[in-house]
Image 1 (cartoon, rainbow, N blue to C red):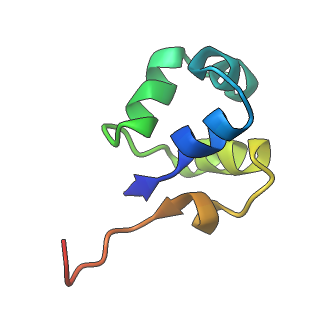
Image 2 (cartoon, one colour):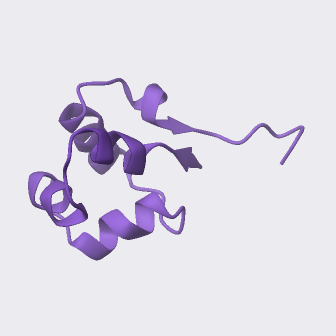
Image 3 (cartoon, rainbow, N blue to C red):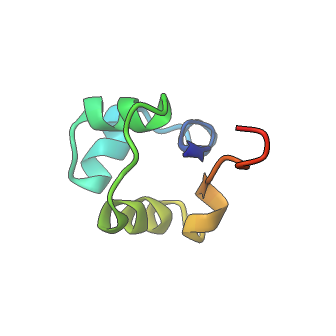
Length: 68
């Protein structure tokens, strides 16, 4: 699953720790999401979307199965 969490976070001037505090997760979790090592469960994905005031689909995209 691809995401643009890092770009959205940086655009707001938030550190990973800032976003983690808003989400109620560890900074390491934010780092893992940003680096594609962890796909968040749906409740966390909704919290991420709410933080950025965007729909989940705008933040997370599945890879195209024809090019993956």
